[in-house]
Image (cartoon, rainbow, N blue to C red):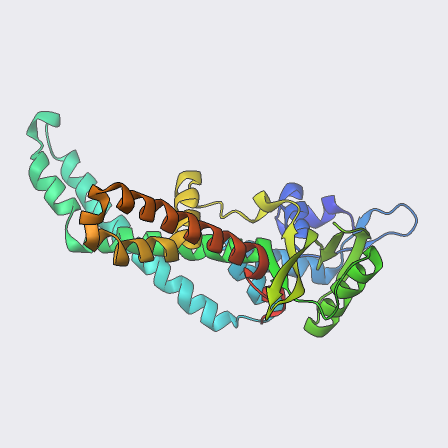
Length: 295
């Protein structure tokens, strides 16, 4: 059936159907005569399931895990139920407050200090921080989905060796990988998602070892849509820079007297430069190592 028919039967818009295909959640066949997408009854069932889970406000990555079979539905439902109950408590608190506002004659009658105290109550703060933690988990999952690295068996000095290294990794981890562009910066798809790769080198016991870093071509497609862009940026910084920040707090702040001398400032700049270089090196060579093959 056509995408229009799939839209009518599933209740999912054509734009969303194409988006789910791009995310690898749906893999319709192609009509050999005109190369148009052809949707089966099983595709319609998958679309209806995605629609149902998204109506429960379930994150897209969690939906992906359910469809892949790596996350049992009962476990996913229990996790989502806990999140919805938490949001329900927050909404109940806000609804009660709005009801109190409705009974007041105007802004002049507001006891603002008392209301702020209530909003800063432990139960409200807990919901706020839990929301940040939930969003941080989504951002972290998205970052791991956008990039992974692995160490090939050989040196990878030619485009052919690069392609073979990618195919070997896919075979070892049960991935459906297709090379779309060969070269030293090849492009390929895994389960319908487009990636590009580059080879980097590191030293292990004095010997050069190749490391291959793979990144999605369209990272914006993996951004959590229910997390604001500003919060995503802050949480991405926390995700990548938590170790340097922790080291800074543990070793430098208790020794603030060092910052009263130029030697102390030189030490601070050297420390921050070293941690930044080591963090970038770890991200470039080993971030999410073998992550695409983990189940």
